[in-house]
Length: 292
Ligand code: HXC
Ligand code: NAP
Image (cartoon, rainbow, N blue to C red; front, side, top):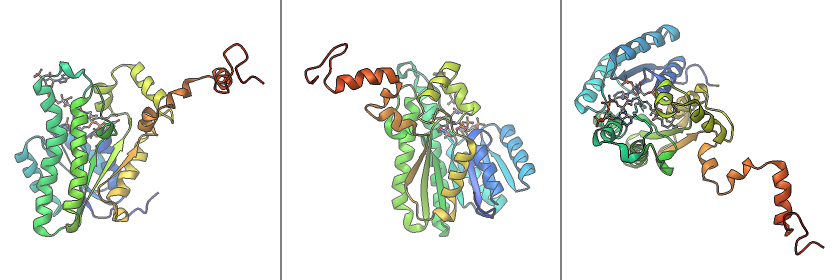
């Protein structure tokens, strides 16, 4: 759906780009002409992914080990990517940690594990690169991967919800503060896109996956190409006037859960016949007060 050179020669850093959505986005960016750097805590996963991605696309990739919770490692990563490619044009804050749990069962370390990756990690990467861009007068784009419960909240993933809400606030705040310097901030809020990392931690039972499918107005999960094309557009120059915006891509999942009467889609046609009689003032099984 795009011209093959949409992202020609853009240098894009995708945190957590060795797996899942990050890897899929990196692959699409490479197809569109970008140079892609990825990072993760597991060096071998990142290096293997970068090698595979380069082989498939014929493009240039670079992998570096980095735990985004460690500000010194983030600094070292930025230096390494800039040394390799000369600059960074786009940062995709994609690395995340998450799992389902009743909140009262969480230890402080469990809370820190998620907040550290999602909120602090995103902030450290944003700050490290933003400072460099500002010092050099370079423009650029930051794309943050959040999710819809960044604004609805959600039980059972509360550290993630709090962290993603913080990342959304970061997106909107810096859109204004750094916008005058040519630095755009955008976010994507995906609904369910099956990845090993998310599914093992969030939907460990098959019936949970079924529930999610059933609750989605489109009755399906997202396809990677749908997400990666949206990401490519948002970081491209074609989206140059989009700043501080979050784009939801969830098949209508969150508004499906929010609408007061949406659960009525469970009713059968026969039940609707009965309800139609009631809402016209007829009593169930008999004539109503306005039966004439
Ligand atoms: C309760 C848990 C837990 C669980 C870990 N902990 N898993 N508590 N339930 N399932 C606790 C541990 O007991 C420990 O606390 C603390 O958390 C730290 O655990 P570690 O294993 O030492 O942490 P670490 O190795 O840093 O791993 C971080 C992690 C892990 C977040 C816990 O899951 C991870 O590495 N995740 C990365 C990938 C990921 O999560 N991908 C999915 C993103 S999906 P104590 O006190 O016992 O020491 C996503 C989708 C959102 O975000 C929207 C979907 C629609
Ligand atoms: P994933 O495959 O588990 O991806 C997470 C990546 O982050 C991994 O590559 C992991 O690599 C990396 N990572 C984790 N902690 C890190 C750290 N401290 N430092 C550096 N890298 C770290 O999960 P995913 O489903 O693709 O999720 C990607 C993004 O999409 C996340 O922001 C997630 O919240 C968001 N999202 C996903 C869905 C979905 O349905 N899949 C829905 C909404 C939002 P290492 O383990 O090697 O560090």
